[in-house]
Length: 233
Image 1 (cartoon, rainbow, N blue to C red):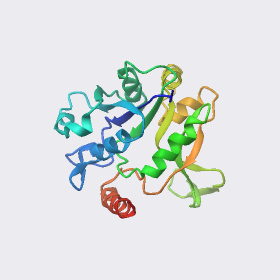
Image 2: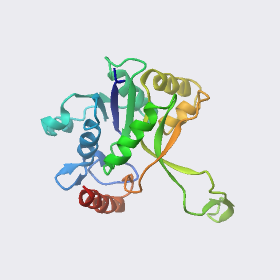
Image 3: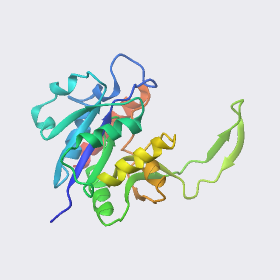
């Protein structure tokens, strides 16, 4: 019997770097919000059992999404940090077993290539730990000093930029996040929490198209990335 897979979409961020009246998950590319693009991508994974969207407490716009996008999906309220929000989402998967897999994705990454997503699932299912989509760093890296000047150049060999989704066992990820928070460490992604248990997540090379909308100019780039994905289908 195939192992079950669930998903958690983090959509409770404050969007402070983006600014504007509309929170990032509800910005639109074409006729769909960023959140709906991610929902449809994850819901189409073969064998997916369902998922959770973690939203700002009191958020009502989720119900405005098409019924097809919401099928099998529940909502949970986010916490003050990403780690707490994801932990809330994992707890909302009340029928998930500890050995089930969970894909954790950012609502602000709407351009998730299906090939990358399925590749991540295939790689992680064969891995004892799980893993994440990521990109090897190609740019030269600089460390700044207090005055905003280059203090030194950092080696870029074996440096990767983390993306989402990240895929781990439900029980192990809950333990990892709870352990990190109990130790006073607030992990900025799920892989960092898993590393805190002494484990090494697998890096699965993704695509630059799977970009994160962080600042206002990023939305135009995401629109261009979406056009490229549609042309490739």
